[in-house]
Image (cartoon, rainbow, N blue to C red):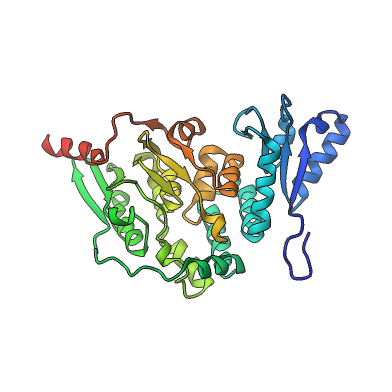
Length: 345
């Protein structure tokens, strides 16, 4: 599977669902055992009108068919074309794609803190890899940091702590300052078990993800790993999840998609679009996506979203369990509405 330089060779193993159904029970068991034991990314592909058997869908990393059979199978117009797209991703950033695939396999079986630790270690390793270096070289010079020091506005109304991301000019891109501000703003809810938390974002989107201008500034991978775990917003949200509501709107990418999945309740505006762009950068989701998304939508849908970069709308997100409600009355200014209503009471 690896060449003399340790680079993946033919990292994707595709299995025909139609051919699998023709096998006897013993042959099926052998195929399933092989799929579960391989380090290659495994994809089941079903032709027109063919369903992916449950034991096959369970064993592979991803199943593609022209009609969905639940969370383990991704419905696509042309399964073979979708498979070709997956092969292209593995050919372009094989290290990131395989790392992501392997991480998803183990994430669901780990406690959340351990799963976040595994994600952080993998992400930090890829920061030192050639695929991320190539992306950095093509990015160009980063923009200078903005002057605003405030990143999160906090308002307490009764037993509800309203937090708003206040960096709309950068589409609430999450930089170190915003991360630290979120951790500080969430601290009262950790001290007070009766406090509810509602998080929203100013401007055209809840958050467009990590601040790309800060990418590549980590001193070293080991330090990046320690910092990521020591200042994990995802882990705090997980501890508070039963008391946290996040309201998302607009284009929410990377961290703007990942962090809300740790909330007990996610409310999406109709214009919400969710996506994971990290693999195209030679990285994996690093704000908890391999943990929160897996627990909400399953590892198969998480694999599809990350490996393909597919963006899903609010309706699909609701169907997949990524959000809990769609708020039909959302407007850009509406995240403050509930906050202002409580303040008037």
